[in-house]
Length: 460
Ligand code: PGA
Ligand code: ZN
Image 1 (cartoon, rainbow, N blue to C red):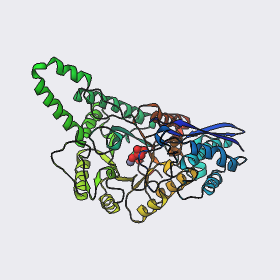
Image 2 (cartoon, rainbow, N blue to C red; image 1 turned 90 degrees about the vertical axis):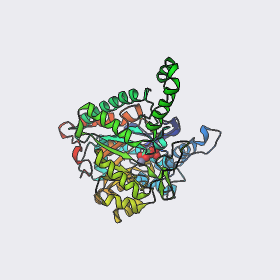
Image 3 (cartoon, protein in one colour; image 1 turned 60 degrees about the vertical axis):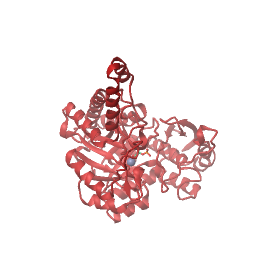
Image 4 (cartoon, helix red, strand yellow; image 1 turned 60 degrees about the horizontal axis):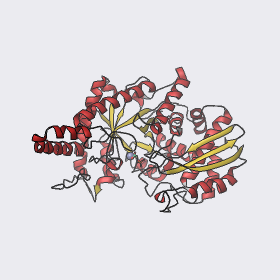
């Protein structure tokens, strides 16, 4: 039985407070912490923050922590940790609000995940197997990782409007090889980018590459060529301007990096457009982050479709996330109906059951981006994955930009057989916590391990 629950405030990968909980049973202590994102849509579960501007700029989570240590503890102590659904529903009932705003979805999810880990220990099975058991999933699968290699949008201080360019090593024979392919491409890309921009390529929140800032090396070069300084300056500005708004430039660099690895067709490309972030009325401003533009260059939704068609024919793009504004269901539907690539709903669906149902009924998109903290309990995460899979939608288990060292989503993706996982670049602790856990799971499964590979879209 659950004997004690103790929560605390810790910091996430952005240095912003989040919730961690230690849940005790007779089998030991089980720890979980929760991520949080930059996008907090009105349909997602509430990430409860204190809002006291004098402390952590309003981001502390001491109320959520207190809710665990007092109300949630009181309700759950004495319960059997293997009763995941009952535990989650006890918290949902205690909260009484639709979006978990009373106790905080961050408080509820931390306890839900810790209870899931305790339940697995109680049953003496690995976490991913336990998740498969409680969800009724029979198809344990190692997911295809979507490694983010180039960052833009709200994640990056460059001029690229679209949020992420990712690679999918679908041609790997196993997850271990997929991780190697991702890492090698990452390092080749870094070399190319450093040379091209005469700069050390910087890293963003999810530790992926940004386009350049003027480096010391470029500056020294400039000093040595004082005579040509004006010319050099002009050249540099041009270089930086071209470099920074251009999606195709990023894709070309990536193509070059992939060809350098020799993996070629075995690696595909995915993009997260996060189009809501540069949608102005009904138009899209791909140069929204470029300062001092001489003219506006807006694209209509139809122009965007043409652009996606062109990109998919020029580059091995197999998946596009949020191609239009999050309320523009019609254009997402039209674009999906063209069957050019997987169309993923992240900001569109917000992992919200009702929005997923609408997307299923109207055939809006064909994959769900699963952000567990937008839902708030393990039980409900299992339900939405089932909902999506029954409708033949793909599922991408996803991290958030603010992550912790907790690798729960790795076990979740294997146990629910989601087929895809998006957890950032193959670099930095909080991202590698996820990828390295998948290595361990694959090792443990041995001969029984199945890598989703070419079946990445729908794995059961
Ligand atoms: P986040 O979103 O920054 O809100 O975590 C990541 C994403 O758009 O996939
Ligand atoms: Zn997204």
